[in-house]
Length: 312
Image (tube, rainbow, N blue to C red):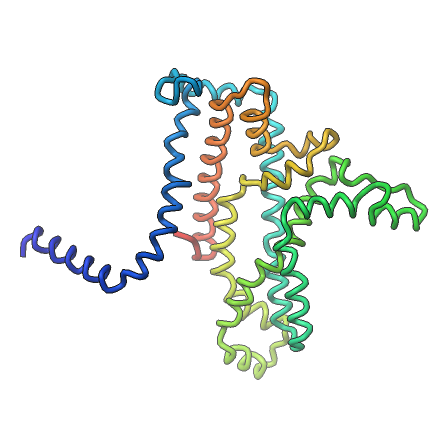
């Protein structure tokens, strides 16, 4: 049989499967359309990073400057602090990655359904609070005069701390408030994985005299490891995508030295500066994407070598 006939037969089989399952392809059409419009189409504008972009003459008419915008960022006094702040805050966020796993393992050991449901609801609910409200709550709780910490400090006879104005506290407040907001939601994935583990394994371990901690270590954790590694790799892909809204809302002149990250710097350079510099801000954003891709590839390779579990 010739190659042409084989290709034609495969095409006919493909169209037959599409006709039989057309409903599934219709459901797939909207996500693909969103991906094309909001992810792939904007890639055309990435060339602005290599041009001296002027809106009046458009992208094609703007002069090509090569890597000049990247060199300008590398030589800028903002380069080192912005990169350091972004990387430190990103990896600090990755350090707390196991907390939802610990919560899921703990809830999986609870026998009281009422207590388990209550804890799940309490830890799950903050995920639906908007970022603006979360930051407003932080300012109220940590207010140096009327906040909870100020009241507690006054009761103890201590001077009320100004947490939101303390540069050393910014990263801790940002990361641990994220943990409080998202750990219940993220734990749902691990609880779902735990339900797929064969109960016979736990029954056999109990017969052999294993306690709860030993069963968690030798049965539950190995069962969670593949999913945890995939989620870790995906989180690493967003390691430089620090939540812009929350960082920007928490910024103040007092903590700007540790809170200025790539996303907020790009926003200020591209939209808030007296002279809007779209080319420079696009170059910084493109550089962030390239670094994030390299980190993703490195962590995926390390996960495959160490645990034999990876995204690809």
